[in-house]
Image (tube, rainbow, N blue to C red; front, side, top):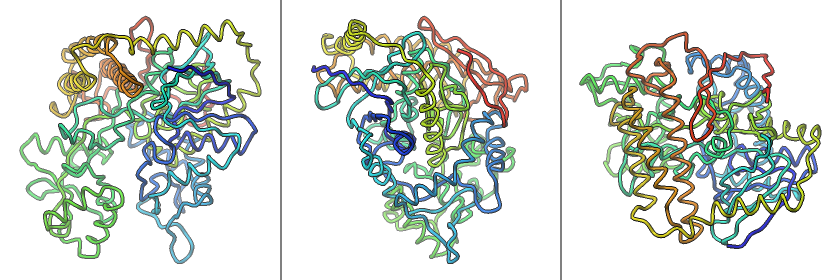
Length: 563
C-alpha cells in the first residue's frame, strides 16, 4: 500500500449535504485550503444521492423560527437542545434561497411564492440537488475533493484534533491528513438492526445503506462526548417497498386506519413522529391490523400525482401499484415501521456540541446527521449546520496558535495509523466473513435491543445479553482478513456499526423511563419520568462507556464546553 501525507487548513469528512455546504461557506468566506474526503463521490453521495421532491424544513409565510422550534420540541417530548434548534431554524430560509441561486428548481405559485406542502415543507424538483451542490463545490479553486477516500479515524493530541487517517478504496493508498480543524459531516448509522427485508433485499431500507455510523464511531474511539443514542429513529413506511408515507399522508391528507377501517393514531396521544409508529404497532398487537393510509377514493387526478411523485423518489412503490393493477385510488396503502436507525437529522443522536457545533474535542466540529441535540433538521437544517460549523471553524483557526508538528512526530503518527490498517491485510483468513458477522450483529440487536421482532421493546436482562454478544462480535471482527482496500472498507464499516450498536445499548440501559414510544420502549419502565428530563451522554474510556447526565439547555443560551 502506498503512503501519502497531506496538509490542509480544513478537513471535511463526508461530502454529503452538510459537508458540501460547509466547504462552500468556507470558500465564500476565506481563502483557506479545504479538503473534502468522501467515501463515495460527492455528485451522488449521502442522503440526497437520488434526490428529493420537497424541502421538509422551511419557515413558511406567517411562521417564525420560534414556531419551528416549538414544533421540534413537541415532537421530541420537549427534550431537545433549544439553542441548537433555534440557531438552525434561523438560517433555514437563507440557505434555501442560496440553493435556488445555485440552480435548484423550487416550485412557485402565480404570485411567485414557493408552493408549500403542509406547514413547514416546500415542493422542489430535486432529482439533481446533489449534483448542484457538487458543481458549486468544484467551482472554487481552494477546495480539493478526494472521492473514494474512506476516513477511518481522527488524529488527536491532548484532546485537540490535528487530522485524520484514511485510505483510497480503489488506488491502494493510505493517507495521513494533518489539518488545523476538522468538520465531521458523515451520515448516521443504518444496518445496525435486522432489516424488514432479508437476503438480497436487505439494503432496501429507509436510510442509505452505505451510512454506517463512521462519524459517530470515530468520535467514540477518540473520547468525544456523545448524546442521546437511545432516541432511535423508526420510520413509518409503505409496506415492503419502504417508500415514504409523508407524500401520501400530507399530499392527499390520508389518515391512518386499522383493519376495521377505524381511525386510531389520535387514541395514543399527540400525533408525534414516534406515536405514529407506536400506535400502528399497538393496533397490530391488539389484533386490529393490518394498518393503512386511507387512500381509497382520493380520485384519479390525485392518484396520478402520487404515481408520478413516487416514480421520482421511490419507484418501487409506483411499480408495485402498476404491477398489481390497483393504484392508491382503488386500494389503501398498507404501512409498517422500519428497523431502528441512529440518525441525528431526524432525532437527537450524535456528538454533544456547543452552540457553534464544536464537539468536546477542540477544533473538531460536527454538522448534519452526526450532530446531536437538534432533530428534524432534514436537508435545509443540515445546510444550516454546515454553515454554522464552517464559520465557527474559521474563527477557531484565526484565534488559535497551533503547535508545530516536527518531522519525527509526524512520522510517528504516520507509522501508528498505517500499522492499525495494515494488520488486517496480513491477518490469516478466518472462518467468518464480514457479512456473517454483520448478520449476527443485526440478529442480536433485533432480538435483545428492541428491534422489529420485539415490537421495539427491550428490558435490562436482554440489554445485558446484547452488550455481551456485541462485544464478542467486535473481538471476532478485529481478526478479520482483508485482501484489498475494498475489503478493508467493509471491515471498518462493520467495526463502526458494532461500536455504535454498543453505544446504543448502553444509552438504552441508562434511560430508565419510556420517553419516546417505539423509539425508546423500555419495558422495565413503561412511563415517562420527569426525573429523566435530561440528556443521557457518554464518553468511552478504557473500552467502556461512562454515562454522563446533562441538564437541559434552553433557547437563547450560548452553550460552551469546558474542556
